[in-house]
Image (cartoon, rainbow, N blue to C red; front, top):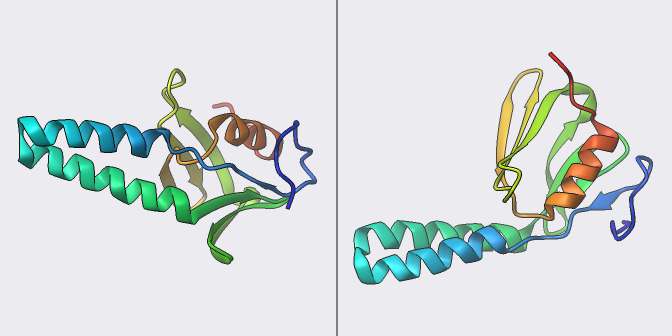
Length: 131
C-alpha cells in the first residue's frame, strides 16, 4: 500500500493515517465531567474510549475503484465508488463527521483518520454531485 505523504494519484491505493483527536478530546472531557456530574461524564468517557479503540483498529483504504474498511488485516466492508451519490465532511473548522450516500444506503463515520488525506482521496476518486 502507498502512504499519502504527497498527493496520491487516483490509480494508487492509499491507506488513511489514523487521527486520535476526537477520541482524546472526548476522553478528557468525560474525565473532567466525572468530577462534576458522574452520570454525564461516564458516557462521554466511555464513548471516547470506544472511539479510541476504533481508531487504533480500523483503517480506511482508497483503491482505484472502491473504499475498503479494514480491521487489522481483514477487510470488513467495501464501498464501490460507482454506487456513491454524494459525500460531505461536516464542520470544516474541526472535521468531526464524514457522510456518504450510496444508491441504497447512507453512512456516517466519525473522523478517526487524517481529514486532509480523506478530502484529497474523495475529491480525486469520487467528485461530488451537484444538485
